[in-house]
Image (cartoon, rainbow over all chains, first blue to last red; front, top):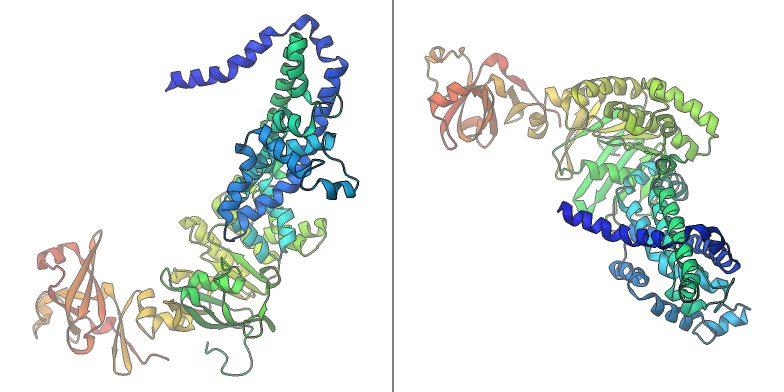
Length: 255
Length: 353
């Protein structure tokens, strides 16, 4: 049992360690501060932040409906929400292309409104949000379902309207779930590759995020690829640490 | 307690049915009074509380009928009136405190006032006064998980009262507390309920006697006995009230005989004229019974039996007897026994209602 656990842990930790050993530390700074690398890093951080925000805006109401409302077909709806989690990202990107692309289902009406999505930074955000949304919904729904309805009843008997109860009771109580869901979504956005490449393309500074840059550099400049990969790992660890650090608990006390 | 026959409506009047739960109740309450609601589990006590607060779960479990509170119609299904919970002015205090875990004690008490738009500083000042009334000033700044269950329950009471509700609904508020905490809480409730209109759901007769001027007893979703609390339990009108008061009740014509199970003398043979031999004073009443169940209770055994003939015929009668005595009589379910009650232990009255 213990041995299997150690093997499991090693299975997770050895590959990043091997990568860290492969990094050319003497040239680390110049490797990760090249123009292409900086463009990719900045694009990745900006789009991941925007995508996470989009996930929150779309995912919180979805989670609220899934956890509170009673309606037929709810189980089917929950399964559908998980779809982006189980379909291959490349397929997701293709589906986005057929929906929002120039020749897609919603392409002509969007163009009439002057919106051109495919192969733009907005497309990167859409691709990332598409694949990350289930993480946020699942996490938030779990936080909303665990017995919090009783607090809402008490709030109502104390004269709190449904809207006030949502802001002053439901949301603060679900905040840890929302936070961990947002971090998971953010990390998933940072690592998005398949859907981005398919739907948004690969233009430096516009749609070429860090994972795409790493994949490109792997052929031409393996040292830069390893260094950039390590940066991505560091950013991910930082995000997870922010969400689970000792200060995260205090955030539940927000009024 | 007769619901709405006279046309001056009471401060609180409920005539509600919850068809899905088999509930059909008519209850009323004068302003400032406390009404205790008692009855076995499943009698509909909590469903009634949910119907009054407007928190029956599920869209299909609706209450129908009328509820009036302080001259306001809160529910009138015939006219489509169903005031939402947060505008009913019925505060709920349940078995568990359910303090908001993200707020400290003071902000929990201030919650209802803040919901009404009272500015933060004023709400906190008011909340502090209420915390003081329940003796909770010293843990005003503590989070719910930092205080004891008894303290949390006093905070929950302050939180409910701070909204100055038209009606305070107390659903078994002492049930989850230990003896010390519940004794303290009972004292606080007695003081603070003096002028507050309240409904107290409880299964403890002590709570009803200490805190409620009137009591209603529910059974299978109906009110089976109601009246002034002391009257109800000293002269129980029927077996439901008698059971709660720990009394046997035998109706003979228009009269009632009530006696405690502990006052019953059990014997295996018919007590004859020489009854003094068994230690019975002359003039005791004797009831022939058939034993139905024996419940050991440490030193004593609770004998549940059914009257076989005469005035006790068909009545369920309980007796408490020494373990050794029951063993010596070789009593078992089905045994024929005699229950005798000394004249001095018999309460004879003409029940009201």
